[in-house]
Image (cartoon, rainbow, N blue to C red; front, top):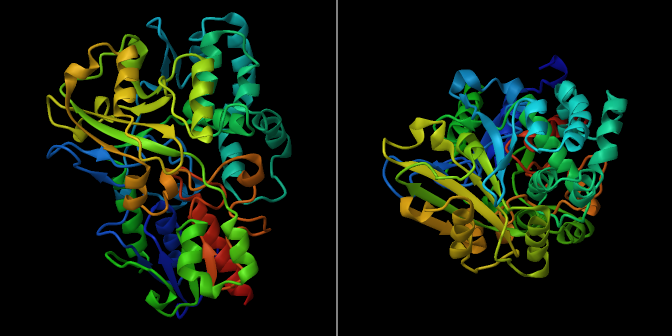
Length: 482
């Protein structure tokens, strides 16, 4: 860190929320020389990155985030150097597999050619290789540009090449291919956006996730995602910062005096907590912020590995379970219409296959969710397990225990998950570049002491810490100018 970011030690900062973004912001502020306090309402830090024994003692489940495609490439985490503080990455043989009803699967491999061959169509393989190779070859430059604040690009031709495809919808991207396997594969990647497949920029999610899988993998953190949070806490305390847990912040009266306040919350909570510090015009703009679909989350304890029909699925960390393009398209459109389909698209993870510290001998964990209408209280456990059985017959015989969380449970667990929205806001074209409002420095508010550092700011959701990182540096530079 350059000396230009150093601040006098008498300057203080309070960060509200100890998720990965809040802790990342706190680390950057503390390393700049500020006295930093993080306030967290839960009994432990973590936000959407906690690990817990949800069902049986000794069986560890990631409560929210699990496979972390962007964490290992994050400029924030690289700058903070988390590995010496306990972060060890676990890489499955395949980052992701996408099975089909005929018992076969397309697989995302670290090798572009192997992935392309899994489509079973020579023309589609060539299209995929031509699309992905330049992105993967320049991955450090690309991801650094995507996760950083909007500015004159350092690599304009690379960004333009990415943008020409990324601006498409998931449907537009899948339409580049003719085979069912390639189309379904791309649809599953685009579905991470939470958008209907005919809306832009769903293709951006597919391209980034695919490129990340080839260039860096979709690793788990050994021992659970909580280990990453613990490493961030170590870095913070090493720089003189501190975390106070069990400290709810309902309004500005709950906050100690400080020179800077950074909020790891969504626009709705910011207005509730700090509305009296913000002008009415800005509060009205925040009130127009839109949230995306919710999720129904499930965790299982199993007596053995999932008996997938497709062999590739037994070697993959993440499974995209949705069949062909048309099924996934119907499933991802339904939540925006207030519906849930019978063959709902699932995102599953099986970390204990690759990280034995997650469960004792004779036990395995399975993690999964599907998109549902925002705020839905409907229980879709039966539909989810029926979909798993479609690709893994006899799955039900392995279930030792299960636990589920609907949208309301998720929001109670973490208020940032508004209506069960794990992305902290909708990612349509009108909002993906203007989170939380259209502003040259989106992390700043009209109050020069107040900043937002949650996933409701660029670059958005995912465990990468970059929302906090960007917010902290924006706050430092504005404080120095003051």
